[in-house]
Structure formats: structure tokens, C-alpha cells
Image (cartoon, rainbow, N blue to C red; front, side, top):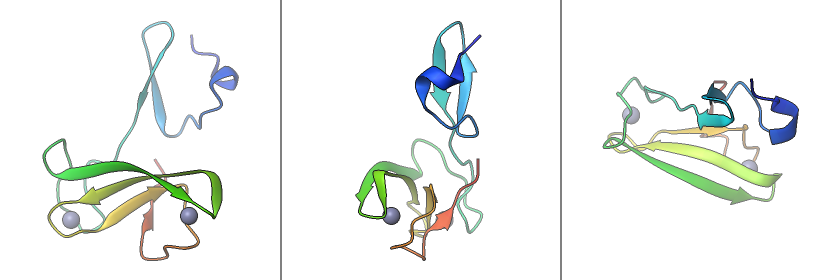
Length: 83
Ligand SMILES: [Zn+2]
Ligand SMILES: [Zn+2]
């Protein structure tokens, strides 16, 4: 079983797989209800002054709405994703 403390990841956002693996979880619908998948969203890492390791963001190709984790104080228009 995964020793979560060693990975320094928030387990709300990751799923354990196999003996030592983790898979990053992601939202399946955008804040406006469009389905999200490999062909319908942009997944990006967003460096930011508000947090040392930056944000994960998911942008909907359909409407440009953005989920982010953790929440961003500089982009209040981005919807925080809580896993
Ligand atoms: Zn959308
Ligand atoms: Zn930020």
C-alpha cells in the first residue's frame, strides 16, 4: 500500500494504483457542465506567485472555464476543484 507521507501529495487528488503507483485524478465535467476528457480539456501546470509549487489547471475547450487546485488568490475567476 502507498505510504502517502513519502510522496507529499494530497490524497484527495491522487488514486493509488498497483504497489507503488499513483494516478492523478482530474475533473470529468467543467464548472459549466461540459464533459471533460483528453479531447475536450487542456491540462496545465501554472506557476504562480500565490503558492510555491504552482497550480494544476484544467481548461474546458468548449467554454474556457477553468478548474484549479489548489485555489488561486490571483485568479478568482478560476473555480477551485476539491477532488
Ligand atoms: Zn465548459
Ligand atoms: Zn495562484
